[in-house]
Length: 191
Ligand code: IMP
Image (cartoon, rainbow, N blue to C red; front, side, top):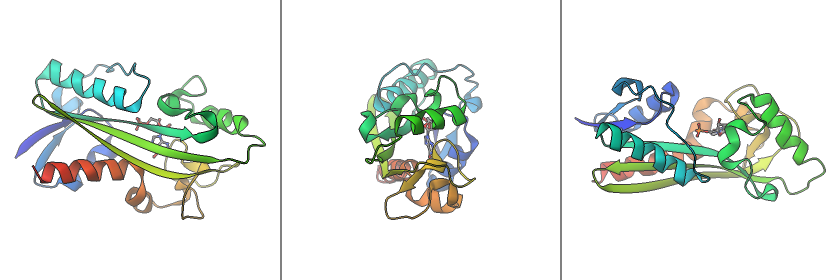
């Protein structure tokens, strides 16, 4: 079986991808390859950061790999928080991140936003990018206890509940990450 490194230690993401590629690829995490560094994410786009991470693994470990980067983009805030989603309020405190975002949208009628993921896949000398996005709106008050990050304030288009009010199966069928991963898996299967 071919091996492929996924530049993450997020168990949930690893299990999701491994289930989708089944017996075609064996997915290894950063800890599986003894990579304990915080890979620099200094670019100002999702594409740039995903690419930096996959490049780091390939150049330091000589392994084929893929990496992802994602976040929330709010239309009236010119795409903020974007690549700063995890630390928008100054730290990884999601309560503060959400409070800051909601405070910037007080009185705003255009609540359009999207979650976006970019995956960078490196196979030998080739790089391939895959994008997934889900459009929706930002509500003014948190709702729901599931999910993570900005899920309690995001309602995907076509639904009447936030990501945090959905079961993980329901969210994983429509999420930005699922769309990008599906594109990656289709590409790998057709090679
Ligand atoms: P990552 O690149 O997947 O680690 O995502 C970076 C940040 O974007 C996270 O820390 C969250 O704040 C936000 N984010 C990404 N995906 C989601 C999601 O599915 N729901 C809510 N927030 C998300």
